Image (cartoon, rainbow, N blue to C red):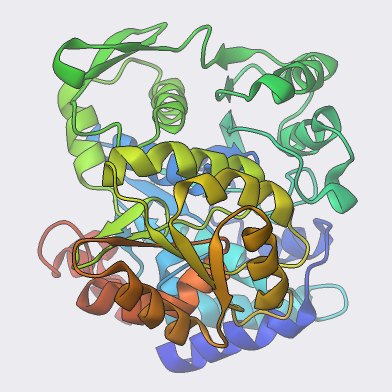
Length: 446
């Protein structure tokens, strides 16, 4: 397949929907020669912050001299955004080559069919293995125990914040949900790094960890974040203290950064140094996660799609925008806790335009607008994300700000108009030819 045909094939698998179970992935891995099972990995699981943690861990490993791959989901700018090596998104040629191999391997799968997420996961592992990644950092999709990513060898598991989400599939309480996510590791596992948990979730997460007799580092106990001089902060791990520059906390939520530092150190088997920390953080591109696009007006893009994510976004907005209250463009999925999301965001926004993302699960905009009006926010439902965004820009004016949030599907719909020329998959930072150097394109063309 050429790159266009590869992306067309991936997109066409959406109709297969979501199906739990590892039988299909295990068959794919066998057919592909287990491209990454022999490589050590960091498996990132949890409810919120997984993508940010995954990319940060990979960046810190790269800055420490390790050839590190990353697999994340979902995407904002395009399919290739999900697979990166040393911070560089996979180019079209390796993407197509891996897609072709996965497509051929489908014949070995029971039933002869795979889901879109299984295809992308297999493609990522195959491509990163072929490119010579020394370590891979993998973001789990939904849950963990039966997630398609649970075919890797991960001596380190990072558990981000856990909240009530997808309860119909993962369980009705935090302990059950955390147990499903921790199912990527065996009982007695000692390579765990647990991120900061909300007050209402901490007890359930602890119960799940104890029930599986797991051990490791906990943010807030073994990893502590302290204020530093001049607005900087200090992250103390069992390996010692690290100073984080004053400009970093606004771009990298403290809890996620602390978790990523802990996971990177567990993988390295030693402490990070501050030069590697600064270099790693400077090289991270994280589309759709507290992403700030210069104005006028300034645009903030965040895929906050559950109450915990919305609360984290609400806490970050004053840091990013100061006293400016943004005009919001909001679109959400029907299976989400819309009330909880709006409870967090309503106090932070001046007005809102609600719309419907291009997903079969998207909620109609009219109920969202009414729910916002019930919370005292002036809200108007508009058909079409682009029209809603353009109206929000006009309403905000040059001195204002626009917030796009509620679903990564909505962000993907608006990527081209919101990001303009910055909405690309070129290697960043650094010259575009890093793609050819990092991914060794000549090897894929043979």
